[in-house]
Length: 262
Image 1 (cartoon, rainbow, N blue to C red):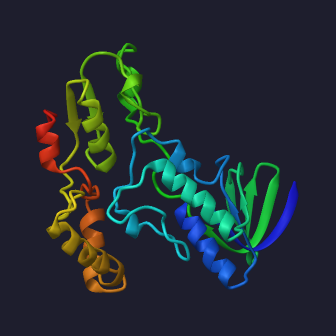
Image 2 (cartoon, rainbow, N blue to C red):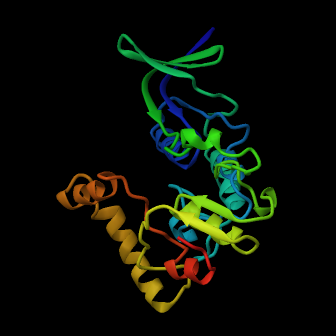
């Protein structure tokens, strides 16, 4: 097993991992970013065909590099993937793709990170893998009739994967709502899951949306922090009991208008 030394190992080469890498590079600190995908940005490329970001382009920039899309637009997933790849290239971030971390353990005063036949010894480890990469499928799914097509959202690409007939989408957050809207154009569709609410602004670009959106983003970035009581109350609201994030681009009315049954 080959052993390497780095001051910091960053696990995950998505937007969080790359942003951490940017700040480490700015400070001249040695580090490596380990990512399981074949290319930087593949975590976005491999999602469903019509996926767009749920936030306007002007709020999607990583530190040091503006997102190249018009203000108010909602970039396609492939634009995001290409932006992440260009970002890593521009700042010469040391991303090791095709490297799936299997174990992190403490050894004395250091951390040991293992990936296949390689391992890194580091003073610090940043885990930037995100929380949504492990599909949550109920155990009874295996007991359903084999003629029923079952797809997790990580496997879904477009309605062409579905067979004729009715469709149930389980999970009513942003991903579930967007997939249900797309599927409902060709299938009678049910959407299962608690109502997570909706953001006070929408993607319509009205004067109200353009005025309120900057205020919401300012509050999210500078006011609602876990370092103050207000931020902690907001966190508790979403975590206890667990609640989904409010719908961003999709409105409740969109779901009703599409004939989707809850």
